[in-house]
Image (cartoon, rainbow, N blue to C red; front, top):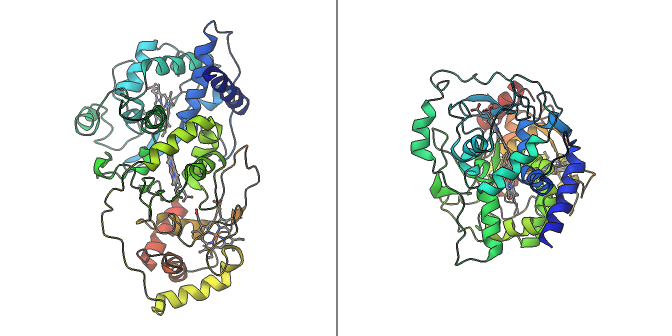
Length: 422
Ligand code: HEC
Ligand code: HEC
Ligand code: HEC
C-alpha cells in the first residue's frame, strides 16, 4: 500500500520534472523514492539552472544544474550544480560525502556550506532517505555548468566562518520520532522540520541569520515578503484552519481563506502540489498542534474607523479594490481571496501587503488548479501615501487589527522592488 502511493506520487513528479533516466538503475525502488523525496525537499526551486523563467518547469539535468541566486540578508549565494557532472557537479561524490553535506553542511572537499542550502533542516533526514536522494540524483543527465560559488562580501566569504555559525545555531541530528505522538504527527514533524524546511522561511531570524527558536514557525520577513505564522495561533497562525483547508492550500495553492503568492507559490508549484495526500495531511496535523508562540509585541488595537488614514484608505478601497474583494472584504471563494479575518493581511510584518498592492501577484500554478486569477499591480497608479492608506485600511477594517504601514514603508518597498532582478 505504502509502496503504491510512493510510486504513484513519484510517477507524477517524474511527469512534472520530465526527468530522463540517464542509465537504467538496478536500484529502481531507491531511485523512485529519491525522486519523490527531492520533490518534498523542493531542491528544484533553488537548483534549477539560472535563467529559467519564473513559473516554468525545467526538465532533466537542467532542473538541477544550479546558478540561481538565493537571496540572503548577507548577499546572494548561488546554488550549486548537483547533477552528476564530475567537474562542475557532484559526479565524483560518494554516498557518504553526500550524506555529510545533507547532515553537516560540509562539502566533499571539507569546505563548509552556507545555510542558504538549508542543511540545518536537512540534517533531520534519515540516512536511508539521503541515500535514496543520492541514488536519484545519480540517474540525472550530467550537465556541465560551472557556478561561481564565492560571491559573498568580506568577511563572510570565508567559509571557515561557518564553523562559528554552526556552533551557535546548528544542531545536527536525524529526526527522532516522539513515541507519545501518533505516527501521523511524527511523519508530519519529519517532513516539516526536515526536507520541507518550512522554518527556513516561516521562523524569524536573528541578526546573524540563525533561527529564533523561541518563535519557531511564528512568521518572519523573507526575501521582501512576509511568511506568516503557521503555528496553531488562531489570529495570526492557522489554528482556525481545518486539516482539509491546510491540505487544500498546500495542494492547490489556495483555499477559501488565502492564496499563495511569491515564494510560497513556488513551494506549492515545485513541491507540495506534487506530494501525496497522506503526507500533506501529516504536515497539517503537525502544524495545527504547534503551540501559539508569543509574538514580539502584543496584538495591536484596531485603528478607529474615523481615523483620517482609515477614511482615506476606505475611499481608495471602494474605488480600486471592492469590485474583486467585495465591500465587506469577504472576497469570492476560490477566485478573490478574503481580506476580512485574513492572516496574511494582519501579519506583524507589512512586507506582503505592501508588495502585493504595489506589484500585483498571480496565484500558484498547480496541476490541481491550473487557471490562476491575478491581482493587478497598483504601484503605477497609486503614490506611496495612497498605498499606505489602503493597506492601513484593509489591516484595520471588518474586525481586522494590525499596525498601519507608513508612507515611508511603502516608499522603501517600492525602491526595493525596483532594484530587484527577477
Ligand atoms: C533554499 C534553496 C535551496 C534548496 C531548497 C536546496 N538547496 Fe542545495 N544548495 C543551495 C545553495 C545556495 C548551495 C550552495 C551553498 C554554498 O555554496 O555554500 C547548495 C548546495 C548544495 C550541495 C553542495 C554541492 C557542492 O558542490 O558543494 C548539495 C549536495 C545540495 N545543495 C543538494 C541539495 C538537495 C539534494 C536539495 C533538496 C533535498 C537541495 N540541495 C535543496 C540552495 C538550496
Ligand atoms: C521560500 C520560503 C517559504 C518556504 C520554504 C515555505 N513557505 Fe509557506 N509561505 C511563505 C510566504 C512568503 C507565505 C505568504 C504567501 C502569501 O501571502 O501569499 C507563505 C504562506 C504559507 C501558508 C499560508 C498562511 C496564511 O496565513 O495564509 C501556509 C499554510 C504555508 N505557507 C505553509 C508552509 C509549509 C507547510 C511549508 C513547508 C512545507 C512552507 N510553507 C514553506 C514562504 C515559504
Ligand atoms: C481584478 C481583481 C482585483 C482587484 C481590483 C484587487 N485585487 Fe487583490 N487580489 C486579487 C486576486 C485574484 C488575488 C489573489 C492572487 C493570488 O492568488 O496570489 C488578490 C490578492 C490580494 C491580497 C493577498 C491576499 C492573500 O491572502 O494572499 C491582498 C492583500 C490584496 N489582494 C489587496 C488588494 C487591494 C488593497 C486592492 C485595491 C488597491 C486589490 N487587492 C484589488 C484580485 C484583485
